[in-house]
Length: 361
Image (cartoon, rainbow, N blue to C red; front, side, top):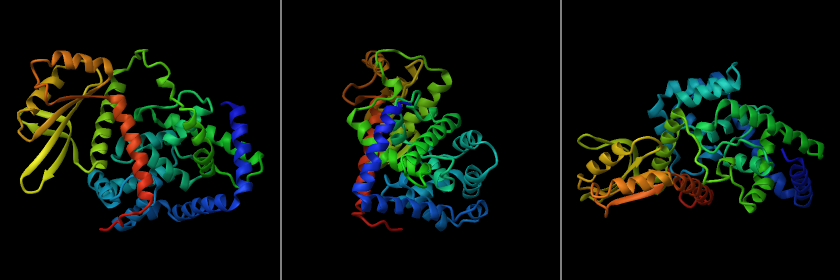
């Protein structure tokens, strides 16, 4: 960690707290209120929650700000995982006796729809002396502080990496306390990262370590390639949902063709417009081309989109020539997919904070 950068940021943060105490007291009061709410739960209380109580529990999270209709998201969590199983795994994650590395990995492997940002936020509220929020702000902030090996893809957010991040966050907490800040646990570290470090990181246009030289082709294992394929597919579905489409993964679009993702838009009672996505992360592209060709036989399909890295997209364009109708074939760089998702998340968080449209059941 770059202690010079950290010391400078801590000093500036302390000065700003003194000069604008009302602002900082208000923000810290909100964090304390959140902490008190979530710490009112126990393992048994979580397991005994009703669906309405679970909705309130989840909808209060910062990570849920991107969704205007939070009930849709919570209902999907319940339907995808089963309510009893979901509560059981959540209680074990937050209050289990196993090491955090094991609890983290087990939860992410077992439960669909709750990622690192959400579960780390819940862990931080439950035990802010041990756990820190682990999201894009953390990654940008830690990278600005010259902390190496920060994850870029979801499969890199492992339990082992989370334990490392929490250890570093404790060092930052100690630096804040040395500067005179009282009661600065790891939830307060997140506040410091968001309010002081993030603007510096964004100003410097910090890149994650994997982006240092995009010309270097990095070796990706078969396991990591499969994880990356899944992540891109999930991001495509989420982007579609955020844009207002009915968005799903693993969809049978026509006989013999199950595609990675589709966006659907209903047009009154006339029918629907469908956009098909196939993701390529590694290996032969023959299956992708064949699936996209078959998808074009569905009259509702308006465009088919191949999603891959720059090198593979060039191969797809070349090998699909004369096989797929060029007018309906689109290509999308997988790095752009991730960037678009992040940008949409930030935009929706900002807009939804305005509460322009009241949520209803």
